[in-house]
Length: 193
Image (cartoon, rainbow, N blue to C red; front, side, top):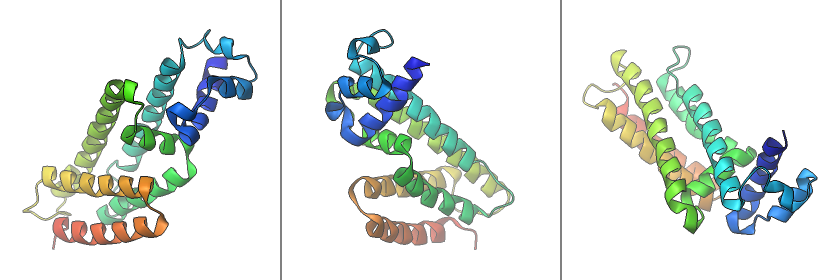
């Protein structure tokens, strides 16, 4: 129970202050324990950070895999566009999403190798989920016959990557303009005519 509470509170601190700005003393105080008690659960700040990062990645994957599951009650266009819009909303409202994306782009330097391995696994799993959706769409004729599943997946991931950058650096207006422009070109290129 205490280890989970430490991770939950640490998530907020890491999301708001980054690795360097998060203080174990502040985390412990918010949990209601003394700082040395954290070491009963985690070897140090690095282990706590990686535990929080792993948990955040797992939650994000659950969202992605559920949201990109082929859905016959929604058109491919609405599902794909809805995912992109929904991710922005998650980023604005969910500490978990904010933390995960920020740390995927800006991991602590000394934890870069471990963080990047986790981020790349996440990106690969996200691409697999998108690929399954495009495979289903290809079978039912929703995407252009000249566009392969791999091309559609790669292009969609490129749109998503550009939107991640807007989430991190831009504001709502920049995000909306990027989404509108990228979506228009992407969808014209993959939809079946």
